[in-house]
Image: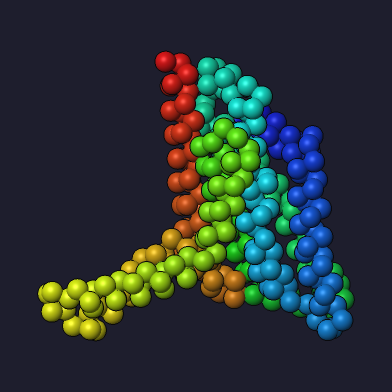
Length: 259
């Protein structure tokens, strides 16, 4: 696993992907940071929230090659036929992408140090938003890992990740629409004589259930500086689940190759 992790992580810097991702992220973060300088104060929590809004572009770039590159070069056959621990391989690839993402985000603590060095204050909201950004990125990287494991083309993998991550920003909108639709349908087809308050309660339940899968909903308390364990548990659980599904896809492919 360690050997695969090192290989995958270093591969980012043998190609332009790693360098471009770090430079682009630092440039965008620096733009936000510098835009506050004329105001005499820096919104560090706002920087993390701002950067979270571009993850649907950045994450597909750094995850699209995780497995698709193996298929393109033909080295995936060795992975399937050699007696390696595929769970370790999948985990190593995920951790390599996560490490790159953590490196990219070191720009935020750097900006915090600049603020402190000039007598500014970095409050709990700034740290909470930073932690929320890291957790959100970990979930998105798990989505990208699964997309790469499920496809044989880097572009297709990137497009799937891009679409899923973009739509994830509007889960709350979809939840509200489904609630309105459910209330309208139940009201129009109310053959059981359900009271209006009960129908509205069903609609709220549907909205709440859909919002439950939204990582932004779970992390909103962290983004405003309220530290709670459930958001961390949710994100880590989703990470483990998606990486496990990616492993099962690769394991299934191994059996088909050996068969």
